[in-house]
Length: 66
Image (tube, rainbow, N blue to C red; front, side, top):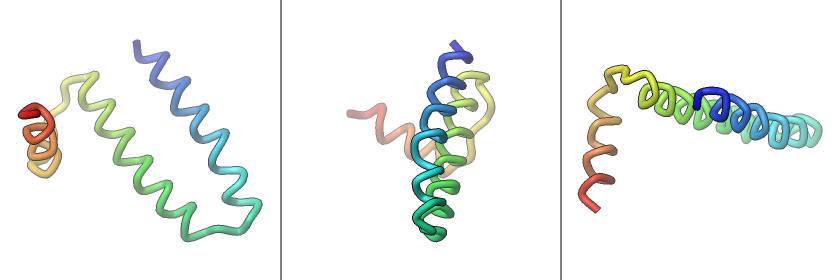
């Protein structure tokens, strides 16, 4: 399961980062890195059952209610 997650993240980076860097879109690249890091942390936290911060717990609770 973790290998699938790693492959997906590598593919996302391989597709998005070169075009952002080539077009000199540094602000967008910075935003991508921040959002990507949050997503990476959350997916690894779910997989390894790490404790999430309260902010992430609120997001999880609101999604589970639906």
